[in-house]
Length: 253
Image (cartoon, rainbow, N blue to C red; front, side, top):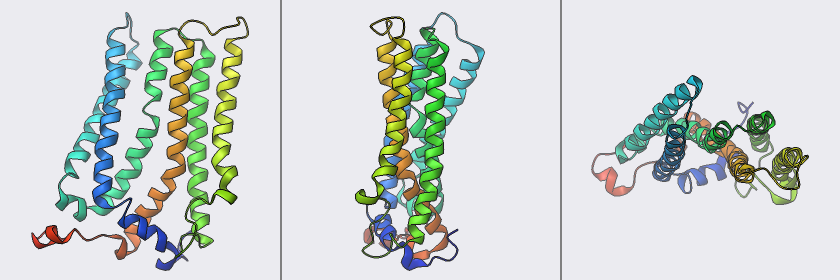
């Protein structure tokens, strides 16, 4: 879909790849996401340990989650070395997308464990899964929209980049409106037999709201990461050189 584009079509994205999403800052982001993911993993491990009974499926999920966290740690360590940061920029850009996708879903772990621990009704589980599915669909639509933005020239020099408030309000607000509607419908069902939420459910809805907000917000940003990864494989100018002092030490890519 982008085969007819040229380097000039990505001018502003290249500026971003040299600044806000430079190799060094991406490395810092790996550590930030690892810390957040570590906290969520610790919460569910401790939470599951305090439960009287844990399903085998949860035990397997916890093992997988710990392994994924270990993989994040290895990635963060590997790209903490400037030589690796600049030498393996293509790999770094691909991993940025993968880590962001995982990061966007991490908070849901706490919500589903709370559902298990508090014997939440089935519609609570359904609400969570519907929100995740909706977020993934929105992510795909956002990536396709980002590709169309490239085709329209919004990443050329002086362009309006991925989002222009005047023309992007619908795309930006749609997922949050849908998410609020889904959660609102679930709350209405919870209140159908009472004037107040049952014990513990209010806290669960707060966690669910935070989870959805994080996922949908990252889904808005990921297309930019995806396009930068694409450009690093296609254009040499997107492969940044190390700072002068590092280059003098022989850390050129």
